[in-house]
Image (cartoon, rainbow, N blue to C red; front, top):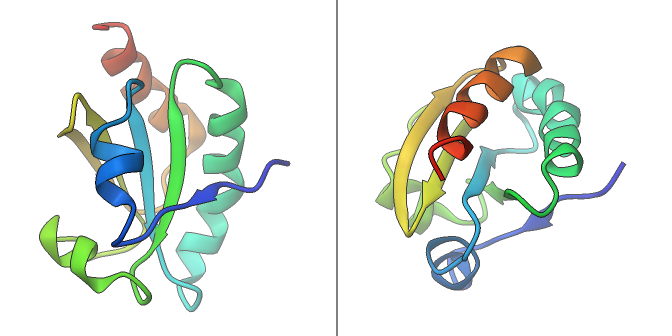
Length: 110
């Protein structure tokens, strides 16, 4: 399985907000058990949607500025950005089917 690209406070704007593709950002932390549970699902989505969706992760402990800027209070939080704006927020370790249905709704609009 491919390792997700890690984004941080310094490159978030370039990698996420200025991306030509929609971006799914996985806000997580090392100590978060639900984050570790959902991580393989997020990686699978990255592979499944290659070329249609950019999937990255952001460690909230290492990058508090971005986490605070987007009011990420609970993790895991999956934020989907399109054209530099947040278009969807999914909080918690949810099944892949739920995540895919949300993504299809967004990507289908494109």
